[in-house]
Amino acid sequence: MAAPKRQTEADAAVDSVVMQVDSTRFGKFDVDPDRLLRFTECLLGFPDSVTYAVVEVDESAYVWLQSVEEPDVAFLATSPFAFFPEYELDLGVQQQSDLGVESSDQVEVLVLLTINRVGDSPTSITANLLGPIVINVESRTARQLVLESSGHSTREPLVAA
Image (cartoon, rainbow, N blue to C red; front, side):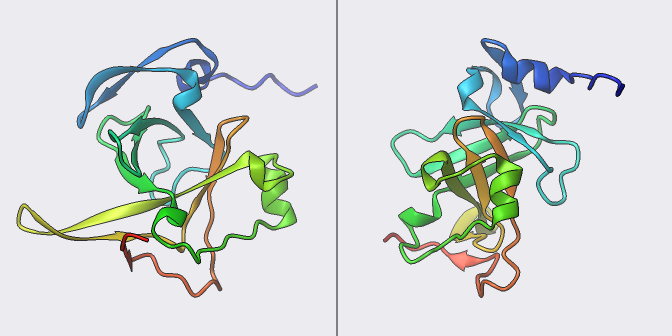
């Protein structure tokens, strides 16, 4: 018989009513479990963060993904379809299985954004279309994919559709 899986503090938080998240960007704030994402594999380059709070940006197409485990880690993200209407994402059978989805109604897609700056002034925003984040909206699990032969880039200029 296998040993029971040890539940981490972040796992317990996802299953609880409300949790408090500490962030260097937002300070301490409360988040409902339905605003948390648990990554089945960490975001590339961030092995210590697997749970993220989704923080809405008032009346915009943007959200912040704030790491629950690391207060310094937060990513600006958006739906790729708001800015790239021709963007397509075909999930393979294994990817669907990994996320536990059977239809596109169960999926939300986000892409991470980079704000390019000269000094303190933003000059442009780019989207990582090569590494979208696919979310099972029912279980709130997520995974970053790498679309190796898609022809997309990690730095596609963001232009309003």
